[in-house]
Amino acid sequence: MLSVIILTIAGLLAGGLNAVAGGGTFLSFPALVWLGIPPIMANATATLTAMPGYIGSA
Image 1 (tube, one colour):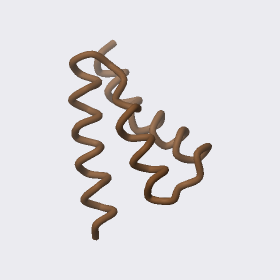
Image 2: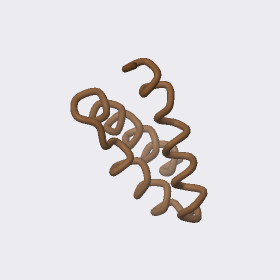
Image 3: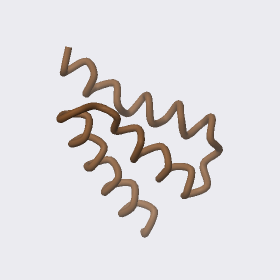
Image 4: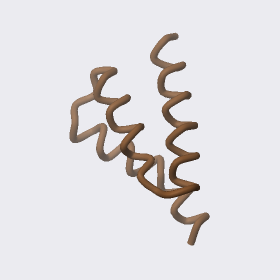
């Protein structure tokens, strides 16, 4: 349950940071790695989850 809360908070903060200035991956990537996801998978996941925001911004 704690991991879901951490990922939710990191996702919301990353989305807000992306909306204002970009760089939300600086929050979501470390949260994923901290939860034990291997760095390459965490990088791919953080990038993929930011895609809707990138498309919406364009």
